[in-house]
Image 1 (cartoon, rainbow, N blue to C red):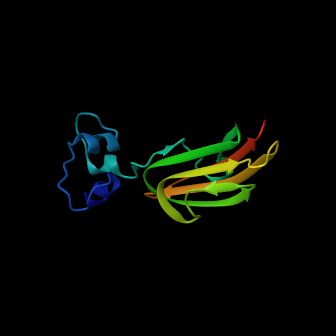
Image 2: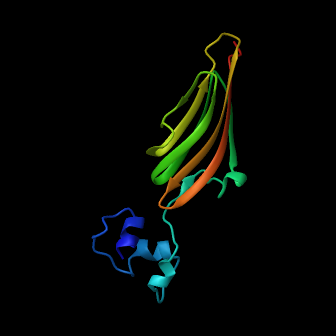
Image 3: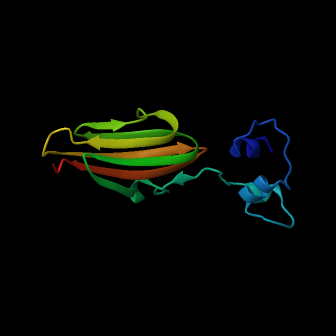
Amino acid sequence: MSQVNTELGRSATATISLNESAVRSLAGVPSGTISMDNLRGKSNVAFTPDGGTSAGSAVLLQDQGVLTATVTIDCSQPAVWTWSGGGDDYYVSVASGGTALSIIFEVSSSVFGGWAFANFTVQGTSGGTSRYWNVELIAEDNS
């Protein structure tokens, strides 16, 4: 039960019951008989937007904007964010290998009449769950 507590973001030693709504929700058993087997392999981790389950099935996230383009990926629990790539005048809120609830990718066009481009491959891992994205950003100064 300590592992279930941890998966739910609680202290491993917190008081817990199989009949709690959070435990039933994690197990996918809204009513009736519930057992530890219903919890085996379950994860309470959710990424928004959800990514691919392997690097080969990475989800493409794109933004194109005037002056600035931004993509944000969130996780329901702290995640380790591993990324590579880059481009022109870009910003990433978390260093590769760092831990946070979310990561922001941004590119800005700081040149009048110019544009900036950035491309990243991203992996987020939390609670044994990993997801993958490709992030493409284009910012243009249309002044």
